Length: 124
Image (cartoon, rainbow, N blue to C red; front, side, top):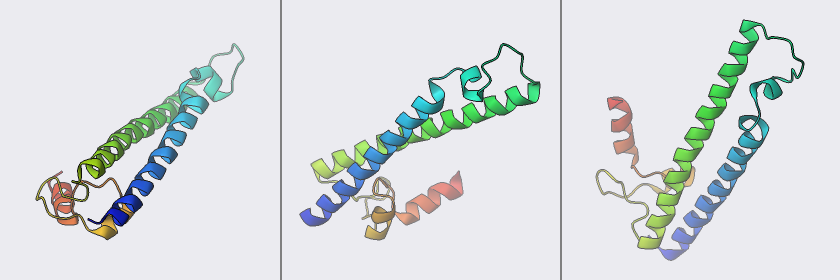
């Protein structure tokens, strides 16, 4: 892959990393670093209805799942940036073929070509 294209993908990866970091920080600031009482907005000393507690708990679990997925994506982005540095960026981890530019533009941290990704999804 030519240097101009590598520079373009590096820029995409760095922007994606910055956006993801901001999202995770906001999620932590807004929800994960607050107690369940603070998150629900009920700062009184009264007990909750069980359905309200369940809804709040579910919401926090969703937020933790999103933060976890963001963490995994961050790892993928860092790996892709490392591959740019060592010259292996854009190669499929399974078959060794070239990942299409369309795919890299859509998901710059993709490490599988479309056919290998499709096969992986079929087997999951």
